[in-house]
Image 1 (cartoon, rainbow, N blue to C red):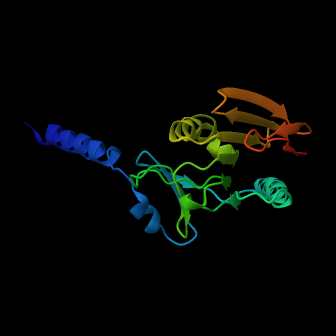
Image 2: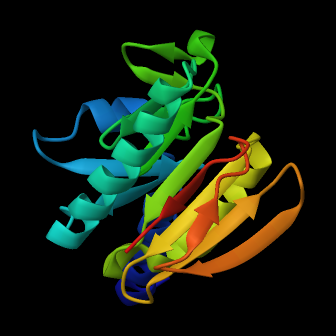
Image 3: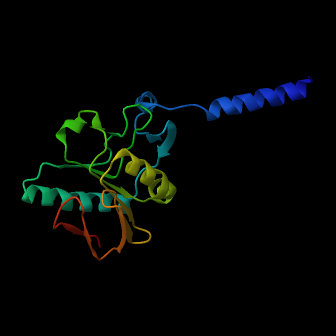
Length: 190
């Protein structure tokens, strides 16, 4: 085998080795300060800093849900990002949803939520659309999340997935959007 073929073969083996790296929560812990990432099935996804619009929506929606829970003496907690969600007990899935609602206090500890939250809301940014609309949708559904909302400020639309009811609905900003896990509660996003 000549040197060129040997180098090409070595290069291909190196690429395969790099592709097969499985990331874990230890890699999250090793990130430099102020760097954020998520891990889905061992694949690492870096996260960009959120925009002003993202943060305004995050705060507004979180506050509305928390106010409803407080008014009704509920036991659920509203936890805005950054907040760790360990969907599986395998260290290969670590997510930081925009808003996480957990109604089982046994799932919570100082590190985050261990297991499927009851309700997750993701606010779409330009760089994470495929993640929110496809990858996370599948991951949350298969993990046992009861309800998942995708809030898309660019489209002024909200996709609502009620997994228990096998229901998907689409709403526009400016409409009352019912929350399936809380009877009689809806959110108006303007």
